Length: 211
Image (cartoon, rainbow, N blue to C red; front, side):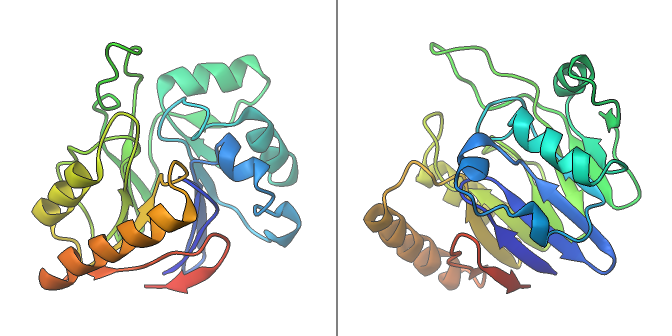
């Protein structure tokens, strides 16, 4: 599988003839790393929940303009928002290569707000993307690990991953770290996961890698 991380939570996944983009939020879109001109194919867009760092309407509008037949898989709330903005090809159901395996809500946000709907998915029976949660029930061989967040911690992320035991992990949701903090945190993750026979990928935004 070929994977490319575009800042924070946005990931492009390519497996065989299937291409999916996950969580194109404002941090990712505003970075300029997502170059639509370089995208030749897009079968699906997955939006795990409605927060701005995962769902940026201008990004979706631009992607749908180039790929009018792309299938958008997301929560009922986001389906409604997209419909209200003239985008009708969104659904809260998966397809033959994207399976929604959990619909638990986003991690608790009290006292700062209410947790929105959140979907967790498997792509091509190989990659798991869980959105903003540290309580996933399962993972395929590759896990996009939500590394840190205002609502969670690096410790919670590591403990969940050790419980799930995927073969490989790459970090997402790390916009909140500066470069020095990110490098040190990646080193800590790598050390822990290596001791547990899990491969940890130190991603570089915009650079593709193979798993």
